[in-house]
Length: 184
Image (cartoon, rainbow, N blue to C red; front, side):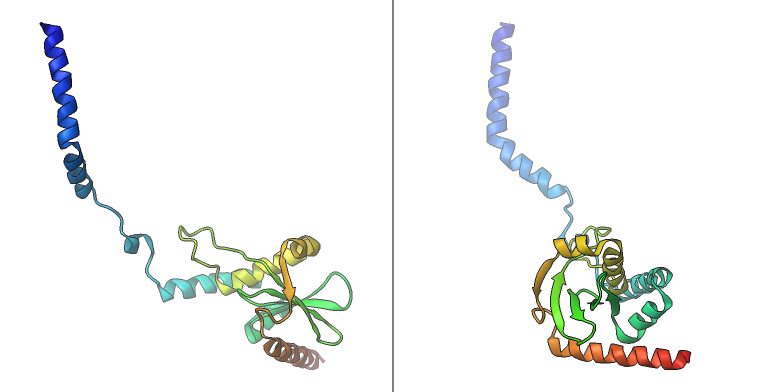
């Protein structure tokens, strides 16, 4: 008799789950609050962005030379000499590293390398400008050949306008001449 009751109970339980389970599960799902997309993506906060850039500039100032920091603040990029003679790099924020011939000013190539900000939960976040330039500067100083070997190389002009880069090289030459004149 108890076996018969147990079997009947199991059969009724299975029928109840099959009959009422989906609607019961849907009601439970509706009651559990879900995070919306707006809750996950933090709103753009210009104050937070300015504070992050200010901290990044202070870090840049503490690492690079005074001349390189002044160059970044006045020109918006840093020029770095290569390991060998005759070439250098322009380090722009969030743009490829641009190689150039130091004697002629001829643009040689672009090296695309990215430094994502993994401290934020969203992959769309990017480093402040000064942090991106500092990451490129440190990578070039630590191992120029290794960085260049892993970067995607393109002909100059693919992402950085050659006209703008040429004007930047002229501005760099003039900036350096002013610094030398001021020191003398």
